[in-house]
Image (tube, rainbow, N blue to C red; front, side, top):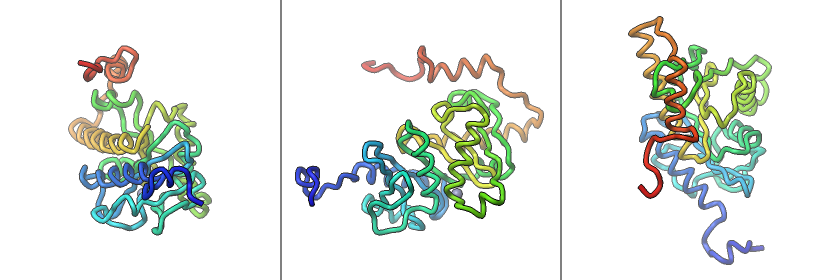
Amino acid sequence: MKTLEAIRHPGKNKYDHIKESACQANKQLPELGLVLFTFGNVSAADREQGVFAIKPSGIPYSELSPEKMVIVDFDGKTVEGKLRPSSDTKTHAVLYRHWPGIGGIAHTHSTYATAWAQALLDIPILGTTHADHNTVDIPCAPPMDDEMVRGDYEHETGFQIINCLKDRNLRYEEIEMILVGNHAPFTWGSTCGKAVYNSAVLESIAQMAWLTRQIRPDVPRLKDALIKKHFERKHGPDSYYGQKEGE
Ligand SMILES: [Zn+2]
C-alpha cells in the first residue's frame, strides 16, 4: 500500500531528506582531509521516523550518491537500501538510542586525533581554540576489555563511548567529541553537518596540542578564567561571537 506521502509526492521517498544530507556530509570528509580511501562514515537521523541514513560499507566517497545511502533503525537493522551499511552502524545506532538530542554522528581516522587515541591520552586543553568549543580535555575512552572485543564489537564501542562520558560526569550535549582508545575519534551534533564540523575542529585541536607539547613538553593547562571566557563568548547566554540575526 502506498503511503500518503508517496501519493502526495510521487517519486519522492520519505527518507530522501536524510539520504541527501548524509551523502553530502560524507563527501565532506575527504574534502576536509579527514579520511583516506573508504575510511570513516557519517550518519543523519530522522527522530520522528526512528531511523538514520548512513554510508554504505566499502564504497569510495567519489561514488556516493543519496540513493546509495542505507536507512537503518535505532536497533541497527536495515530498513531500506540495497547495499550493506557501514561496518560501524551498530555504534551509531547505540548512540542514537541513548542520546535523544543528537541528529548526526561522524567517525573518522583523522591522523592527529587518532594518534592521541592510539596513545590512550586525553587531548589537554591548552589554548583558546580548544576552549571556544569545549571546557574540558577531550576524553579518551579506555580500551575495551577482551570480552567486549570478542563480543558484539561495534555495539560495545557505543557503550564504551557512553560509559566514558558517564564516568567523567560529562553530558553529550556539553562535549560533542571523544577519542576511542586504540581506535579513533567519534563526533556528534544536532545535525550531520555539525558532527562533521566537530570532526574537523577535533583534528585541528589534536594537531595543535601535539605541536604545542613538542615545543614545550611541560606546558600548563589553559587557566580557568580563559577557558570560561572563551567558551561563554561563543556558547553562553550572553555570547557575542558572530552576527546577531538581522545584523
Ligand atoms: Zn574506525
